[in-house]
Amino acid sequence: AQRVTQPEKLLSVFKGAPVELKCNYSYSGSPELFWYVQYSRQRLQLLLRHISRESIKGFTADLNKGETSFHLKKPFAQEEDSAMYYCALSTSGGSNYKLTFGKGTLLTVNP
Amino acid sequence: DVKVTQSSRYLVKRTGEKVFLECVQDMDHENMFWYRQDPGLGLRLIYFSYDVKMKEKGDIPEGYSVSREKKERFSLILESASTNQTSMYLCASSSVQGNSPLHFGNGTRLTVT
Image (cartoon, rainbow over all chains, first blue to last red; front, side, top):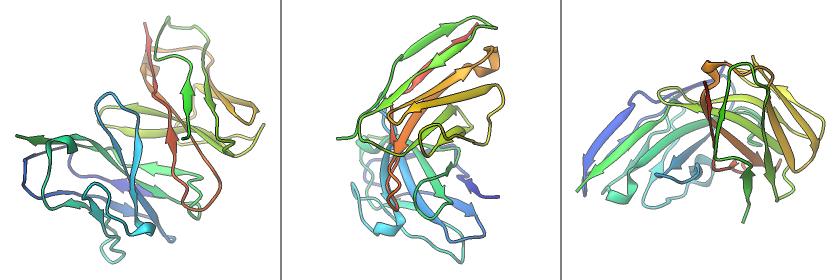
């Protein structure tokens, strides 16, 4: 069965510091991974997906199949990055047929 | 821009009541989902549907049912509400195209007293 693990419930950094939100997955097939973000009082939305290999709002994430990880990184955190972040695993060929989410990490960026 | 609309933002119901949560999307998406979001537990999939009148159980379907009579509408039904169903409920939709993202509604915060 597929599983997504986000080991940190809470993460607090200072503005300008690097930030890394960890995500590990367990899946026997070919994984497709995503990061979703929920800012205060806003709906949950896609931040980035591994297949696109893109940088969004300064965030990047690299799929490491050897370590079964998909950590989210940003070199210089900003206060507006404070939000709940969810790592998610798609297990149906990328159609988001069934998306399994981690338990989330609440990031707080302090001034 | 895709819009997923959940009919109620806040709902308070009594134990034993039958509860309907409604969700409508305007992008002709094939897939629709219901999740519940609880602190410390993340998002857990209740039910999903990939076509009209089609439904599949997610990870926590017990105590819930769904209805998808029209492509744009996906309803979550609590047959007999219980206090442990107090939660934030999120509806989402997506197309079947590869790697298409989930589009979420604003959520319905349900309190069962």
